[in-house]
Structures are given as structure tokens and as C-alpha cells.
Length: 480
Image (cartoon, rainbow, N blue to C red; front, side):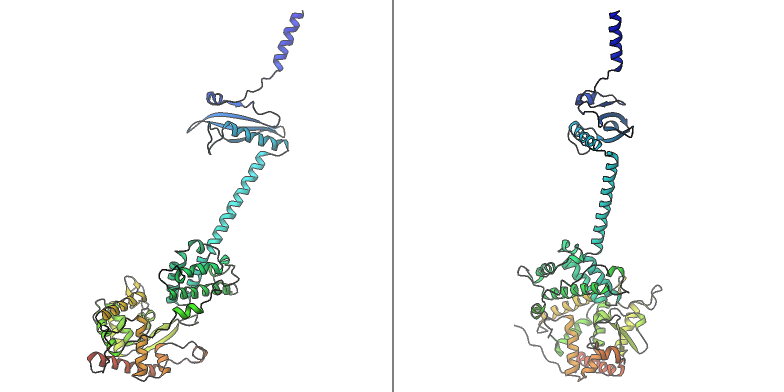
């Protein structure tokens, strides 16, 4: 009887006993069959357990770490990652999985839900990522480069295409390219020290070739760009691309320009003598490219008008008695119409241009007269032609010193004044300079066509006599 009782007690004890899981090992995990799950006995139960599950996937058999715990009377499970026997950023080793499981057990003991905490962390990371992306986008949209581009766009919208083209090139070549880190900074964070660094590259003690005039133009354009951005904040008509840069001061104005201007921004004094001008005209007539030749001849025939205005002539600008140029210089929101008489010399050149670039079906009257390869010729290309002529004449000892394109305009005015005795007021109207004051901008609206016609007649007669050799000319001094 005692024997039967002992056997019954043994069976009863076997029915209620539980076998504790053994600590996992690398070999245990390796030998685990697909579809099976094992608990890690190294993790003390009570606040969750660590398990590993092996399963088949389309890419092969994988082992995954699981953490299970009780939540509101139900078993909750969280995947921790895949198993890896050695440290790998794409998985967890046995030791790493146990460390993570211990951390999660501590959370469960404190009454936290690991899944809810994980989701909250992921949401926080997502929001921070979006915020960083937005800040980066705003920084790019409101960077120094964006502020400068907005200024260039404003110049173009006001018809100041020459200044816009010049500013865009200067910003690209002397800020964006050599200083990308400064260019990408938010405009509101730009300090005077940044522009000191930028300008020092052009005129500093370590600058190999001093570029003083470029530095002055860069400073001037950059200062105007910051001023424009500051003013746009209070302009209800300003576009969104010009506003909200957050700039409250102009960091460029702090940099003194007086000494730099005195050293580099010298007023040009070179003008050609009658003999030098005659050689120049002969060289122009020999230019094989018709458009380059015609624009230089048109500048001479119109008494030295600016290239950037002549090159933008269209069929719509040619009238029966006058041609209309557009002068964007000065503080104008719109270019000022500048009419010139259509003298026989000018008409002959215009007719030749109309033959080269007749009205197109697409553009009609807006077809440019100086259209070359589907774009209007750039003033810089014509300036290069003038420089080539200057170099050729200087090497041939036909001129006393080289000259630039701007010196031709100065030459014309000098001869108009000293030789042809055209008054200062008439020269100002003819050459369209000094006309930005209150009187000219508000009150004086006359076109002065008769005075311009008389001056142009005197000038073109002088040129005709010069070319056929009946005008007395001075011989330039020869260089040794």
C-alpha cells in the first residue's frame, strides 16, 4: 500500500513540474529546426522572456529574436531583430539580444509598454527628420546664394539686363564657386567677416593678381542685394523669392570701400586721336563677321551709344524717322526710351541687319536685329573684338597705347566737344548720360530730335572726311 502511494505521489509530482529553459548557445541556435522557437534560460522570467525563432523566408532560413511579456492578461511580442553569430549592424548577437531583453524587462517592471515606447520613439525620430529636412530646405531657399539670385531676378524684372548679367557672373565666379560653404549659409547668418574673406581673395595680400575693380563691383552688387532683401520685407508687391530672408542689417556696408575705390576705381582717360580713330575704322571695315562689323559701325554712326543698348534692338524699335534704344542706367524701375534720328548712315546699317535677321513668324516685330545662333549677341563678345583690334594696332605701332571698348564712347564725346563744338546739354541728350536727376526724370520729357540730328550730322560728316583723308589728323607718337 505504501508502495502504491509513493508511485501515485511521484506521478502527481511529474504532472505539475515544469522544466526550466536552458541558456541558449551558438550551437543550440544553429541546430534549431525551421518553425521551432526556443526560450533563453539565461534571462530570468517574471517581466518578460527572450526567445529565438527560426523560420523559412523567400531569401532562405533566418533566426529572429523575440521578446515576450504579459500585458493586460495577454501575451505581447516584439521582434528585436535577426540573429547574427558575430557583431553586425544588421543583427544582434546572443549577448546583444540578452542586453536588450534586460532593458525591456526593466521597462515592463516600471509599468511601461515597450511597444508603445518604441512607436513613440519612432514617431519622434520621424518628426525630427522632417524638421531637419524642412530646416535644410529653408536654409537653402533663404541662403546667401538665394538672396543674391533674388536680386539678379529683380534687376531683370526692371529691365536692367546688363547689370543682372554682370552681377550673376560676379556672384557665381567670386562667391558661389570659391566659397560654397559661405554661399550655402542662411543669409541672415552672414557676417562682415564672410565678405572680408571673399574680397580678400581678390585684393588681399595673398591675392596673386589683384582684381580691385572686380572687388569693388562685387561689394557694390552684394550691398545692393542685401538692401533689396531688407526693403522687400516691407514691400507688399515684392515676390516671395525676395522676402523672408530674415536679414536685419547689411553686412557688406561695414567693409570700407573708400581706399579700395581710390586705388582701383580710377576714371578712364584714354581717348583716341583722329589718326588712331581712322585706323580703328579701317579695322572695323575689314571684320569678316557681319554682325560684329555692323554693331561696331552702328556704334560709330550713332555717336558712341552703349553696346548693351544697341544689341537689344528689335524690328519694333525701328520707326520711319527714329530708332528707339532703352537706357536702364540710374535708379529707374523701367528703362528710359532713348530715341535717335534715323540718319542715312544709320538707316543703311539697319537695312543690312534686317536682311540678316528678318522678322520671324514666331517673334514678329520682337525679332532681334543682332540675333546670332538663336540668342542675342553679348556685349562682352563685342568688347573682345575691340580688344583684338586694339592689340593688333598697338603691335603694328598704329596707336600710342591700347584702348578698351569704353574708350570709343569717350573718344566720340571728346571730338564732339572739342572739334565739332556740340554743347554739353546736346551731348548729354545724344549720349543719354547725366539724365537721372529730378528735372530729367519728372519734368523734362522732350526727345530733342532736332538737336540730336544736328550733332549726328556733324559727327558723321567728320567721320566721312576722316575716312577719305580730307580731315587733318594728328599722327600718334611711335613707341620705341
